[in-house]
Length: 213
Image 1: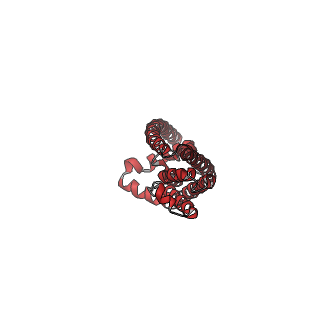
Image 2 (image 1 turned 120 degrees about the vertical axis):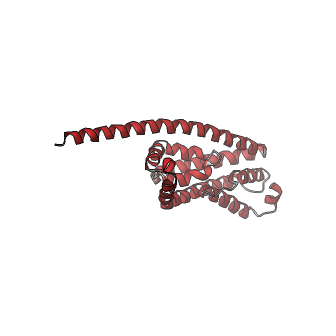
Image 3 (image 1 turned 90 degrees about the vertical axis):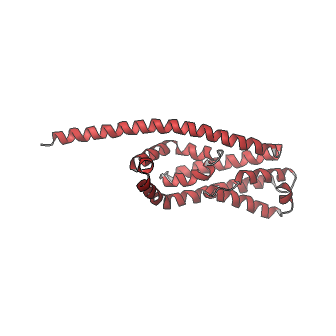
């Protein structure tokens, strides 16, 4: 990869890195992190400027996530409606409502931290749009996460070379496992609270109907 980048003009490298990271953030499974690590190593050899590389990578991440958010917000409800008819237990109105409550509370952290986690880099933007996260809140989390991720990956790749790619690969999958476990626990807590809230609403409605002559 480094030899390939060495044969490409710097302007093209910036374009390719930004494009791949952007498309990955939209929701297309592409090796954005691997590309950034390789470009960071290339920067350590003087092929590209590390500061410019970090800016391009962060811009690609932020723009791509924003496009993914817009796509999720525009088409996500239709997808959820279709899935709800096919799999009502998992995508019906009740589980979707619970997911919305969870994302409303923890969504900003999911968008920020998801930039460092395998698979969540692809899903965070579209998922935020589907579940109706406020765009201002999403943009703040998206921008800070994109800048932090791009700066960290570029810097460590520039300083430590390809070994940094191995660190990020391991960390991403470990972080994914931890995220899944934490997410499962949060879902259980939110689901229990939602069920209690629904039961309370039903009881209140029953009491109200009973008072009506």
